[in-house]
Image (tube, rainbow, N blue to C red; front, side, top):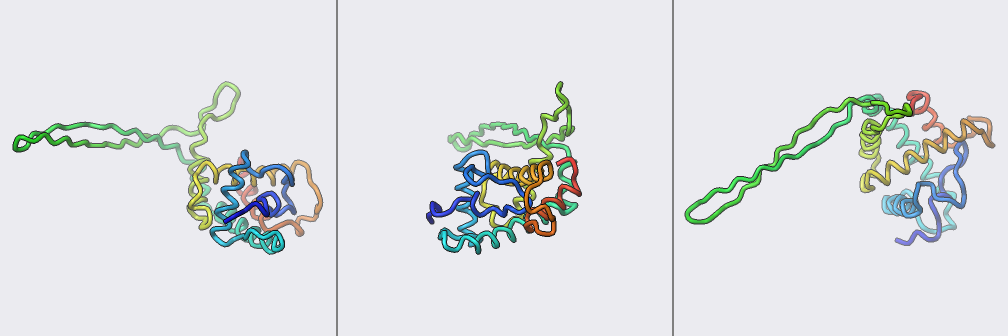
Length: 197
């Protein structure tokens, strides 16, 4: 499924978001291509430039649904949960049975809850586990995104949050919020319910 005809940056809803036309939406251009491919595979968008306005509307609806899911209190509660650290202990047991040696491996998984939000010297939290757990939970609720890796989805999700935050810091046309995209409105609802994001 070729996606060279359109780029992710061309179909992201712009009203109420700050998104550059000629730069990738995510941190890396390759990640934009991966996100676009998953959107195409889920039939949210297509590849033909002639239908770009239809894709923009479809994507706006899909992203609105994603950020509406992200606003659910049960998902937002993950932002305040302690981070989970998983440690695996492997124990090897050797047993001799009828002259044959059989090796059995036993894997024990220990889950340790770390305290979230420990601050370093500059006052920032080094632990983003709560945020990443939250973003993974949002990804699980977003049908088209479930096949994306967590880092790619987190990059895309965070880029859209930043695009709205940048608009809030430096508003651009349209200034009338009623004319903003459904995506921008859904992101704003999330930011209003979680001011620390």
